[in-house]
Length: 225
Image (cartoon, rainbow, N blue to C red; front, side):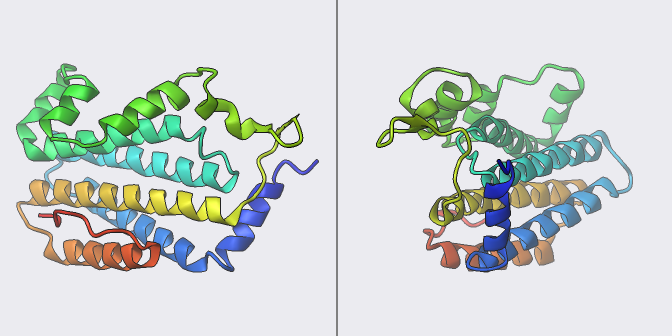
């Protein structure tokens, strides 16, 4: 048994048929890393700077974890990570919308994630609820375990197979969350520096538009501000 066979095939696809997908993600991660480092280096290092840079770094790690699990065809299990990722990026949005809320972090009195989502008018409650039931906690639901059964052969699937179309769908979702994380981190930098960060916003907009065309995604209703 080769425990890494699925990942090996996925990596080969990232340099072959899915090379453009991989390139878009690589550029997204490069942009995110750059903005996080710029944010952390803002002088003076106010509580807003320190806390939001750390939160953005956590979002980056969660994105990388989701990418890694997708390569192993464990996207369903990565829902537990994705739920935390959404809460992390929503927290950045919550702080960006009212920077004085940083005191809630420092005083350990942040509202619960659902309340924060309502405060920023988030639209992912249904998705978060799905992850909460089928991924973040184990329930023997069809959505939780169906991928572990080969119904036609009546056998358990102990190693998920590589499927190019499934990986591409997961890379598409990852790209959307990556763009969102970049947007909120750039907003943090803009708040911290009292500068609109127009060049970074333009770079993100170009990457987003290129990615949305590639993945045939609908344009977002609102452009970043």
